[in-house]
Length: 69
Image 1 (cartoon, rainbow, N blue to C red):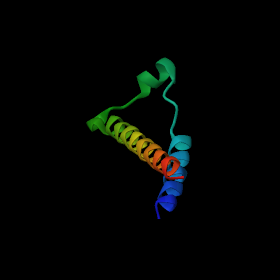
Image 2: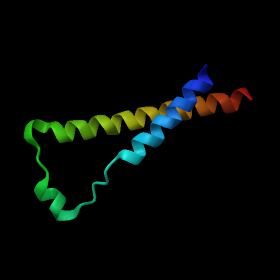
Image 3: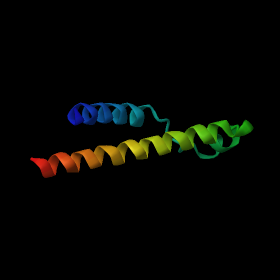
């Protein structure tokens, strides 16, 4: 059961990391960024937190499987 969860976590991490848009747009990205009601920043913060949570969960499961085998 945990190995299935581990596989799903790895799949979601791959998808989440590859769909993220790079933020190195220079000055054009700074001038066109619209922070109306804080929605772009809150969405980006949520995705960052979700990514870190999935990475930590993945690593903890990897350590558990490594110790048990």
